Structures are given as structure tokens and as C-alpha cells.
Image (cartoon, rainbow, N blue to C red; front, side, top):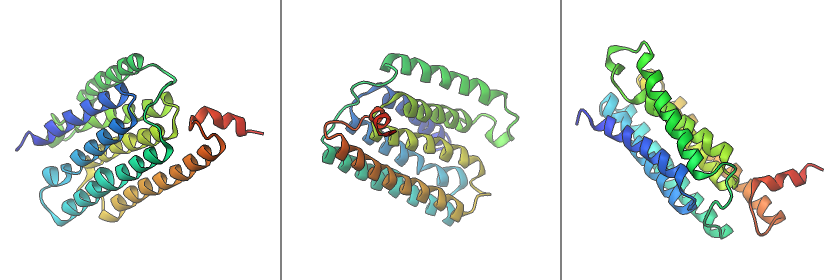
Length: 213
């Protein structure tokens, strides 16, 4: 039980590699849902089964693991797309980059002057590696849905880092972060619908350049 948070964080890091190595959008959404569901277990495991931790865990599980993935899967079915065909950077170079960033995150995490309770924890390396994976997804993928997934991965990294301050952060601040994420999904859904109306065969974000005039 003591090592369970570390196992969860290792699984989160491995999911980063899976997300950046597959072109199947449905599988990416399911992987993000699994990543969010795993992260929702961390608050009670790290802070104890307090009301605050359980509320944060339940909210994170509902939004990250159920609601947002369901919305994205519905968007994928509605737009009738299944793959990221032409990423800006190929899948193998992207995997090499995320491996490099993950290794750097572990090295950097070992050099930080942390409290004794977090000295050998994977929270810092996992959070930095997940932030890097989200950033890479945002800049290397073309489709708007994949970029929404990159935003979610990036937010997962922030969520992991927030576990260091779980006892000091009030529930309303954390709920606000989750609400911002939900609002972003609706905004991106509106953007994707507008793109799909203008370009019926594609939601490639490169087509936005055509709208400059």
C-alpha cells in the first residue's frame, strides 16, 4: 500500500509514451481517461482519507475519467475521424523527445531540495514528465481533438505537482482548476464544430491559416 502512489505515477508516465506513440484518437481518449482515473486515486493515498481528499478524488475521477472522455469520444464519432494522420513531428522522434524529457525530469527531481517526506517520491519527476508530454502533444499534433488531449495531459501534470501542496490548497481552488478544464473542453468543442463546418473533410488546425483574411 505504501508503494501504491509510486506504481500509479509510473503507470501515468507509461501512458504518456502510449499517448505520443499512437495515432488512434479513440485509444488516446481512453488512455487520457485511464490516466485521469489513476490520478484521482492519489489525494486519499497521499493525504489520507479526509473529506477534502475524498472530495477532490471524486471530482477528479468524474471529470477526468468519465465526463470529459465521454464528450471527446462523442465528438470523434460526430466528426467521423479515427486517426491523427499527419503529425508535425513523426511518432518515433516524438517518443525519443518524451523519453529525453522524462529522463531529464528524473535527474532534475533528484537535485531539488525537497522535504524528507517527498525526497524519494516520484511526484516531481512524474509531474514534469507529464507536463512535457502534454506540451509535445500540443505542438506536434494537427487535429484539434488531439490538441485538446494535449491540454488535458498538461493539466494532469499540474494536478500531480499539486499533490505536493494538497493539504495547503483549499478545495475551491482545486475545483476551480477542474472547472476551467471542463470549460476549455466546451470551448474547443465549439471551435471544432466551426472548423468542421468550414472544412467538411478535415479538422486540421493548419487550415486556420486560411481564415487570416
